[in-house]
Length: 248
Image (tube, rainbow, N blue to C red; front, side, top):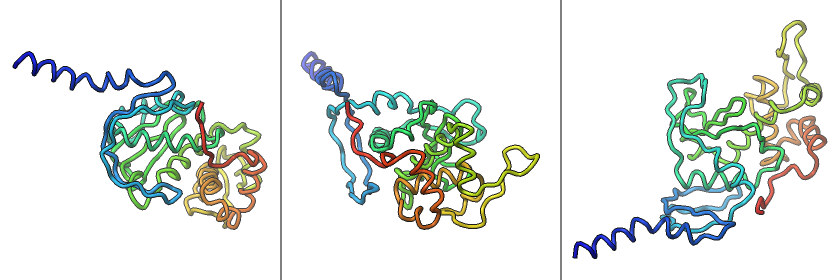
């Protein structure tokens, strides 16, 4: 009886590895997990459920980004009282799904990690970023936030950082950000035309808001900040939009 129990137990505990080994070369194993209910940006509702383990097709995004999920505090992170933690499987899958649909220009190679933390020091802020770093907080996965918009917004911050000096200056002039003489990296903002009020804070925040709206709510951006809409369209072309694909 003991031997039989040992054999059955061994088979049970080894099953995830056995199942993973059955995946094809172009697939990866998604472990069994609980998926919380959520509503995707396109309005499709997903009910909470226990997801069985399965083989999923590998993609360019998976190969490039799956190793960038981090659970430890980023090096030199200024908000030292923030608490970082492991990613849940369903959270990773949702982020990868969103990245699959992002335009290539949004997927900077300079982002070294997407980190997971409990809450921002500026709660209920759903996410924050620095050069090479994106941090996602609990609130990003809850109403009223849309995870796709949150993620695209933070990736847009890196886009701005990556802009050449020429392109950054062209954006600022096109959207009426005027440099202050003898004060480096200081600008006077236009008086109106912001899709979000915090866009007044800096050209970078304005840029991140405008990229987010261009991708998710383009007609609003076109109406409220036409110069930003036109600049993005001119700079990145008609292919700069949410896409389907990413598969090899």
